[in-house]
Image (cartoon, rainbow over all chains, first blue to last red; front, side):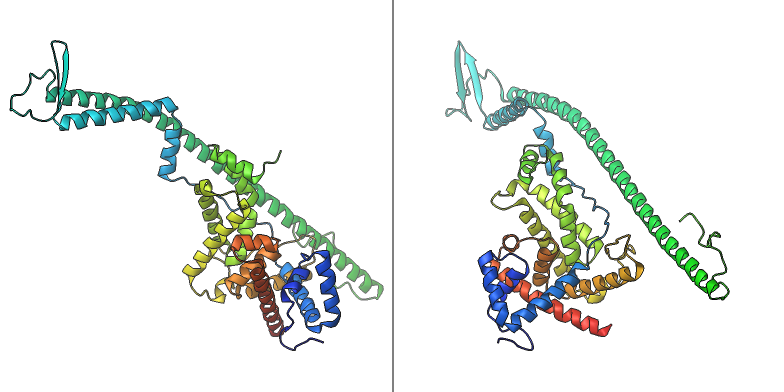
Length: 243
Length: 190
């Protein structure tokens, strides 16, 4: 016999838990059942755990209102989603435009000179060695202006496009949000109505039981020659109605 | 047709973000139940629920299909619960003895046809269980909750907690022993 007053010294604790929750395969189950025939400690423990499990079963969650989950998106998520709405070619064109603008700005900063004279195309960077600059076909200021114009034009286009998209996206988000709120409110009200109806039904059941009890009690008293303990007849509704 | 979790995840990742609400509907109650029993307060449980689904939504791209989505979700929820418990510090038992901030009593099942005396008795038992459970160390409490209320297998619990199955069993064993002792003590005080 293997038993202790306080705690279980048996080695088969894990088997006990596996058996308790019905997860033991048939062979292990049979083996453990044989073990239970002679191990008092495990048998007692099994009984005690069964009692604990019954107690745990007493705590069940009732009709709980659904937790409202709102999936708030970060600004980065929204931006990513917004950019994702544009077709690939638009995103590609924007990228190429930005890259070209950066290249032109870089060339301008490096003092690049581009000349086109007598059909010959020449590009030079920085100052020339002898200090005599070749006849500039396009001056640095002109390049700057061209770059600025190109950037401004591209930016204008993209801003217009993004503003329109952003406005429609915002409208859609607002509409979604409103719809979610309405649905949540409707659901909540329905739950409240259901709970109230259930409560009223319970009250009616309890009231009927009590009235029946009153009638029975009065009948008993009457038959025993005692004045009715409950003076009101059940036809007069002392509980009020509307519950 | 009912979509599997993996199918819904695929749809969400493909840009159909609204599909994620199907996962929320499917898993919000188990996650809420787990959080409520871990933390003991309705308000905290709702916050954890919100945090869990938001984190899952944001990190869905990182979810590897080698584990079940539900295991991943339970893990996120448990991490959120532990983080909240750490913030609260050693929470005094009295914090769950009273109504919460909104005056809502702790949720206990309400079976309409049950008689009043039986219901009172059961509510009293539920209250006792709640206190005894909450007094357990968190690592035992979570195993008992997942086994008893979420009805997960030992292997699933081990996967969620990323511990060996034998550890799950030994924690459950010790947890049940401690629960039994506490419940007996409480009955003695009644």
